[in-house]
View (tube, rainbow, N blue to C red):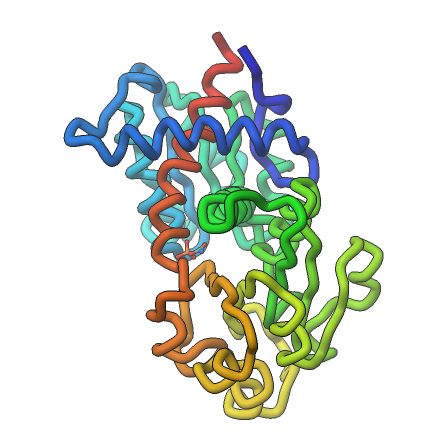
Length: 308
Ligand code: CP
């Protein structure tokens, strides 16, 4: 039986294309299962998972919890805002206290890049990164690539443009690693101030003209402007950003081909994407959310399987 190469999922950078394909094959099986009348399997029975969130989340947190419940795991949820972190407890102490209650797997979101690597080096549990600051969001990239594979048949050879706030986006970095490992071509598009210097060293194309990017791509992944991570002004106004980089029906109609529209959420409707595009037949935004459950089931199943 094929096995996942890593004991944790800390990022896409340190997993292989075979790992990603294994996640997809496993997710195919789980997707079939969760569309049956009886959606639960006993695969993670007797495994206890803690969802430890130091940052807000809607999709990732619900998706992981649902995935854990579908796998029959025992689940505990921890949110920093309602915990003793506000009384000064450190990350290690917090997690070690949770582990003392016999938790085997920790799904963590944290604002500090590298927090999950730090945790994996200091605690005895399997760690899954649910987003660490501006660094990586590996399960988002896996579900994004899985959704492209589902829609277009494969990821290899496809052209994917990631549009928007690349500088502050963990989704962008994980997507770049994941798509390239699977043989896709990746472009980033946005204002100069929101594209990291030297990003082309990662092997991506850089484009500042949205129409040129849209004409090039098969798939456009539209990102939110991460105002919560911006300590200075990177562009004059959201209105100007939207005029230059927002995806609307007029721009789509100017293309002489159909493209697939993605967004990791949360969407700022009317800024990076208009409602008519987000809700159009070209959009696979809700498919991404649906695929998040099967993909996360696959990741946890494969990690837990390493202990057997
Ligand atoms: N895509 C994503 O990570 O969404 P949440 O912040 O709601 O989890």
